[in-house]
Length: 446
Ligand SMILES: Cc1cc2nc3c(=O)[nH]c(=O)nc-3n(C[C@H](O)[C@H](O)[C@H](O)COP(=O)(O)OP(=O)(O)OC[C@H]3O[C@@H](n4cnc5c(N)ncnc54)[C@H](O)[C@@H]3O)c2cc1C
Image (spheres, rainbow, N blue to C red):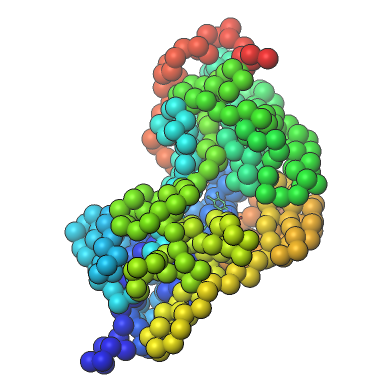
């Protein structure tokens, strides 16, 4: 409480894993009033985005209303607005809509965006996969190329059913597995007039292995599973250009395609550039071990938006579990500060790293000691850890019911082409290099 008896005001920017968990923990305290600001009215669950893009789960499974998530807490206000500027000295933020909010404490948790590393044409032509809308757009594009190729099979020769995924980290590897399963699943039955077996998923990474952060055994396992699913893995090559109708790799190969999924890296969301705070690797805000920023009392920066120092002298990974634990820790530190006591350094309880590679296949390295698992047991570990990250019991049940239905029935009830902007493909757009009907599917320099 302030000396006049009023509550301390905590302004939180971002209702993702970090911001929402901070708000929820503070909501239980009578001494604070919280204003949570997000540009969307929902909290999104990124770990299921590739399932949304491949029609395995629906929108409601990956998004929860922020108001409902915080319902029943009169000391929490939810405001929808896009924060465009921060004054960290006064702990004030301003929104594009013209409002400003000043707090006794300011918590910045605005997450990430795709990092295209200046790759020519990528921002214009590739599909990033960080948000709900991006996953919906990608789903519509995937379904649309099947519809167009069904109508005009000549489009196959122009790469209509080539899907290029850039980046062999967890997001790219998971997406490749799910997309290959989608294609090999029911689509051949649904498109009896189309040579669905000609569809090809490419996974491109400039490194020497997939899932670089995992063990060598996991690298080999992921490659084996994806190859079994028919994925063409291109390692040791970078994507040089993403054109509307093809991609060019650093070895000179050109792959005709209308669907390039960008899983090639992340950087802090655009607000970081207007936050008036020191930035480091990936444009993220540099924080102290207790998640505050040197020289700006009362300002905390959390989750993907921050470079959080780890015990090994590196930074913590961009993971939902890191973000969620940051949020809870910060709520505790704010209450500690209000009580006039010392803040403590953030301690991350490391549950490990894991990636799912389509039906039945996953790799998991559990806990700090990285106990290695693969196959169905790793699949079960993935489900368990991610169920705990979901924001509510109802969302958990709905998502798993949808998913189980897709899994056992092998149908995709959520195969909805709902994004009109993605439904219009100008097949004449592009350099024309791959537009000749006699052009080979892939031109290789090798
Ligand atoms: C495809 C994909 C799969 C993933 N899978 C996993 C996984 O399996 N396991 C795992 O642990 N992690 C996974 N991650 C990483 C995980 O999702 C992130 O680490 C986590 O979301 C970070 O949480 P956050 O709260 O920092 O940011 P976010 O969850 O991104 O939340 C940021 C919030 O800020 C809001 N916001 C941004 N800018 C503004 C602004 N200017 N004004 C107002 N609001 C704003 C956004 O709308 C959003 O709600 C995955 C990420 C992706 C992209």
